[in-house]
Image 1 (cartoon, helix red, strand yellow):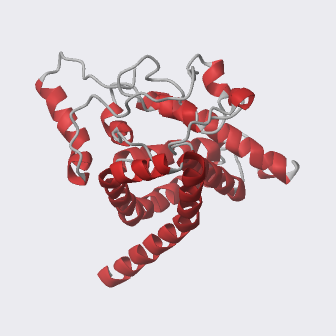
Image 2: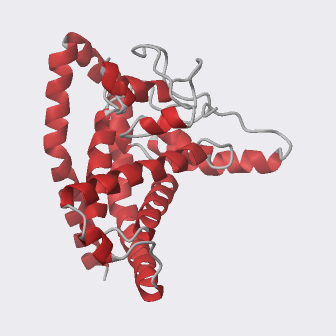
Length: 282
């Protein structure tokens, strides 16, 4: 049993790492073209944080992904058994493929927008704060998630999309687009997209979401479509973002400290039940 589990974990890790190879090379080339020597300084300054990001990524792939497969398979079977979906498979089949795929990504971003706003409430901020703790943001920041945050994200987003009755291929398109575009908007690029920023999330827009101590914290929750932030009053892109990033929480910089932080925060809250935990999500 253990050798088989180890083999599966190794295979999953190899697949995940391979899937990141070409995006990593592309992101590195783009950063050098756009920012030149400044990109090299970012690489130098972010080495320690990138190592932590990759360690959390390995934990995600080896431990969390197999658990998610089991949980999502179980919930999918329940939905299938009890017919828990708003639209039938035939309704989706009647649509052009491109339209069904677009609806999946658009609906996925809408669901994720509200889930993301919930992650910035005091109740569950300690698990999401790990994602915000990078001070030199790179595309690998898109890999920095606490396992509890990764579980809640995947379960909430996928379950709500499955309730729409979307076919499996459309769910996969949503996951791929939002995953890789999510990595891209974490790059240290000054792009605001100009007029297109009213339709799509730019790297500059998302960088404002990661600021530490400035007006605008707790904004820009969408990943792909900025229309949701505009519609619900959380859009903030005054200019390219050049203010300090990170969190005010006292989170250890190491991987073990990052993993322990939600439990440390919960213990502190229990010991001081009348105090409100401070965080950079509002």
